[in-house]
Length: 350
Image 1 (cartoon, rainbow, N blue to C red):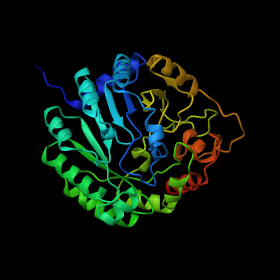
Image 2: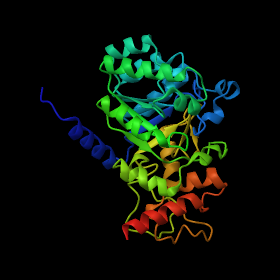
Image 3: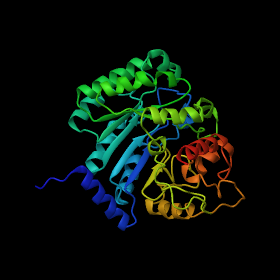
């Protein structure tokens, strides 16, 4: 059998689906549940017993996975909350793998048990992506809000490395950990991994602005990007924005809804992590219904005299209709923080 490089296979599969107008990937929030209560987390507002009771059953998730697979999706990301928080995670994971999905898992690592590790040794995921926001117990637990959580995550990292399970480590940069970034980079690079910090924070899904209060200053964002040779725009998936048309009547200026879609723990399919309405529930509808809706959403035009529409730095801006709505209640509103950041980026490039 002729071997093919993963990079070549991925490109070929993506191009095939693009020609057929089919999606390639899906992010599925299995649960909003998580052991941690990080102050900057945008989903933690639903990490409570009342909302967790409303989440999908195992059979409902499996039925939705069938629909996702039939839509053409191959790359599947289980996220949350923390997907490992579900007691039925391994049953769901095994079904997805046997179905043929290429599975990535986003997690804090705090719920990774020996049972999960033993299963991963037999049936490896494509990658486990852990969020590590501190490499000292004091910093980590000040952010997580949970005592003894640091030790759990460190054990998970050691176990993943020892078992040769593919994993990555991400870091959310906040006012609480910015002074520890050099230590975090050293820790991550000693593991043989790339240090991947992101400086972007936005309001919670219930429009609680708490995470916004933890943002570092725009000047510090540029300093972090330069110091660690990264682009937060790339990390946030914003680099695909329309660079040719800086001023446009289109409200959306990104690739949302074209190649990927998202599902929450209640089975609602929506455009992206921040634009969750309107949505289509996949218990009663098909993925095609959601994709049809998304095409209408991304063609929306500005309805107000928003300054964002004619802004010459819009293609450099980290704001978007979803983030603007969560922070201001208006998807067309300016977000002062992002305006200042875009100005600084544009000034540096002029």
